[in-house]
Length: 226
Image: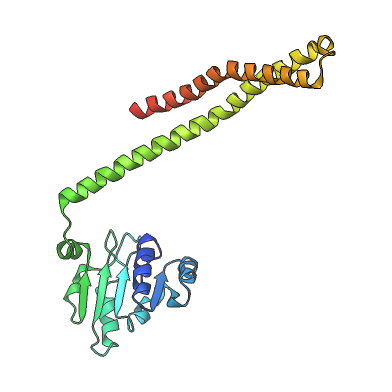
């Protein structure tokens, strides 16, 4: 396996599921080692410079690097074929741009499969693909809108908390101010006064609190429509 990115992760999972022993080669050895360690003993790692030697043993070479130029050329593979005792090799090039020189296809004992070949071998209905893409885009927009709304409500939360806290503080201040006039009340009666004033304040604060939340949501919806 050449490369240690998303393509490599997908390919490794599939190959290991089939019982393959895989050698992972990458320009950055530490990145290859990190990914190989995730899969345990089924994957070993090596630097990409070891490719010529590794080609002498591999039955399948999966290419998925982010290189802008081919990493597997005709000369390197031709030399490796000479040490393989006529044993064939399959090269699967999944990279964009290509990791393998197209002329490799002409070498005897090499079966090169690239993305163009896969498109022919595994055709996908264009209408179905477009529909799937539309659904994904719609879901992405919906999810982004939900996240945006959640973030805006969360941003409004401190203002709502402060608003309600001030209302309760005003209630407590007023009770303390009139405390001398309530000193003859029994504990039960004083508790009733506490409960009554708290309920009144909560009811007074309910509508403004809802308005603050709706304003945040409406602002989010307006942005989504725009």
